[in-house]
Image 1 (cartoon, rainbow, N blue to C red):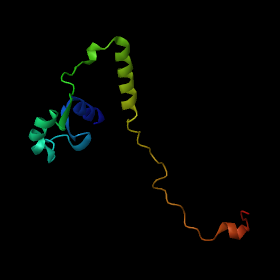
Image 2: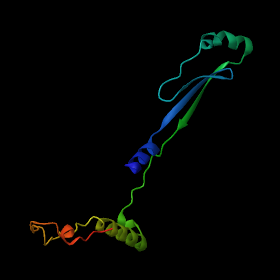
Image 3: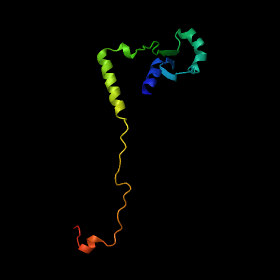
Image 4: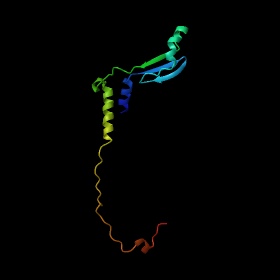
Amino acid sequence: MLLALLVLFSTVSFTIEKHFCGDVLVDISIFTEVDKCAMETYEIALEKITKKPCCKDVIDVIEGQSELKFSSFEDLDFEKQQIIASYTYAYFSLFEELPKLTIPHKDYSPPNLVVDIQVLDQVFII
């Protein structure tokens, strides 16, 4: 399951958008567009005066892996095949069923005691 999640996250591509107003970070968005600040509407008039926009958008694209390599057991060299085969055999031999134990005295019922022999002989464990 861990390997499936690793493959999934390594193949997913996404973008991170950042909106700066001056040098101040206003908004960050991963899956949607960023919200523009109020200065964006006044930027057209400001550009005519300063010839430099005050707001800017930075887009970082993180691309996932697009091609995956599929290999089979036969592509491995002989030593690696031996190691994998012996590991698999040893792992599955851990789960072998134990033989059924026979208990010879299972149906034996002890005799009824008429008197307590330890008290009668006065033998006590100290």
